[in-house]
Structure formats: C-alpha cells, structure tokens
Amino acid sequence: MSENNTSHNRGMSPGLKAVLVVLGIILSIIIFLIWSAIIRGGADLVANAESATPTESETSGADNTEEEAPDPLAQPRASVIAIVDAPTCDSAETDTNALAELVTVSEQNGGLGDDDRQLIVDTLNKIDDSCPKDFTLDVANRVSGAGVPLALAQISDEADWVTKARPAPDGARPLTDFNTDSLNIHCTMDSTQAACSIYTYTFPSVPESCETYTQTYTVGEASDTNELCSWRIQSSNNRNANAVYANDTFACEVTGGGSTVECWSQLSGKGFTVNRNSGTTF
Image (cartoon, rainbow, N blue to C red; front, side, top):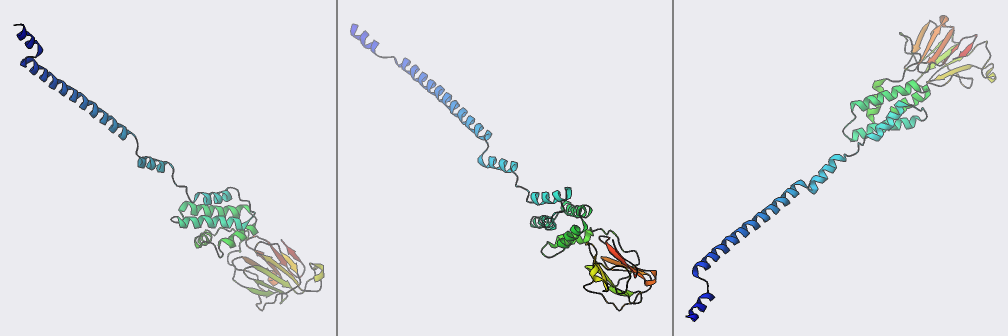
C-alpha cells in the first residue's frame, strides 16, 4: 500500500501535463507577438528617421540652390557704372577698354541686354557732358576704331553722342577748299583740321618770325588754333560771295563780299577769323 502511494506521487497526471503544454504554447505565442511588435516598431522608427533625414543628393541640391554661380557680367558692368557715376576723364584707353569688356563678356554669355546697351549710351553721354572735348573725341575715335567689338562701334555710331559746340548753320555747302579776297585768302578743310593762309595783310605776324611771310591759321577737332608760317595753302576754287562751307567737323564762313573768312571746329567751337587788317583766334 505504501509502495503504490510513493509511485503515484512521483509522476503527473495526463490532464496536468496537457494543461502545462497548452499554457506553454499560449506563452510562446504571446512572447512571439510581443517580439514581433517590438521588431515592427523599430523598423518604423528607422524608416521615419530615414525619411526625415535629407539624403546626400538632396543636401547637395539644396546647397546648389543657395550658392548660385556668380554673374560673369557683374565686374564688367560695375566698371562701366563707375564711369557713368563719376567720370575721371583721365584715360580714354581705360574707359574704352571697360566698355569693350562689357560688350565682349555679354556676347560670350548670351548677348548684350537692353539695360547694358543703355548703360553704354548713358556712359558715353556722361563723358561728353563732363570731360574736355579732346578727351571725348579720343574716346569717340577709340570706340569706333580697330580692336573693339563691332557692337560697341555700332552703339556709338547710332547714339551720335558727341555734341557739337557750334554746329554749321543750315544751308552750309560741302566744300574741301576755296580762295577769296581776290586770291588773297586760301582755305582748306578735311577730317582733321581747317586751315587758311593769307598772303597780304597789315597786322603783326604770329610768331614775329613770320613777318613778311604768308600767315597761316589752323584749327583741329578740339585743339587750340595754331598760327604759323612754315607752310601755306593754295586753292583754285574762287568764292568771293558770302556763304558758309562745311564738312562733318569743320565750317568756314565767308563774309564782307569775300574780304573776311572765319573757320571753326563744330565740335569744340574753337577757330579763327582772318582778313587783311586782322587775324584773331578764339
């Protein structure tokens, strides 16, 4: 009797074993579900973190947007703006180079814009308004000369920006040379100067060493009038009637029925008046 009780206590009943097995399975399922939830939550956190952090390409794109490429026209344009704001009238070459650089760089980057074209015109006009006429003419010759962009020469020509201090009057006739006062005064005009020689006169020669020699006066585009006797002019075109003769740069007016001739540069207004009794410069 005691042997049977001892043997029975050492083992578990089949019902209890079944219960324990079921409990173990349920516990395993619960643990699996908890673990799956933890893994899934961690994956979601990683995904959210990755979506919130910009990629390298996105960061690079943002940097590119913020750091725009420098404007290649900024410096050439600033150099020209400096001239129009405060022209120094020191170097026609420097001013011309600045204008040419703006045109050149513009043509290399899609063409010259209307604003920059107007800036060039404004700069040329400011030079004409602010600088001595000889400086203005130097710039005018350079911006239309060899070695500058064709577009710059065209802008200068179209702007017609060099003002004339004393334009020829309406009705002036084109003529390159003439004589008057019974062949006593001979004059000529070309693109660089107007000049007259008087052969017989009563006023003192200038310089004094010219006494008894032909007195000649010359005036350039912007230079002062010169008085000399080292060379003389002769023309076969007799014009004793009152009239004005002119080319694009110079003008000469005959008055007194041919006794007096006055010539001047239309650009600077400088010139001379000559007749038998006097020779004056202005």
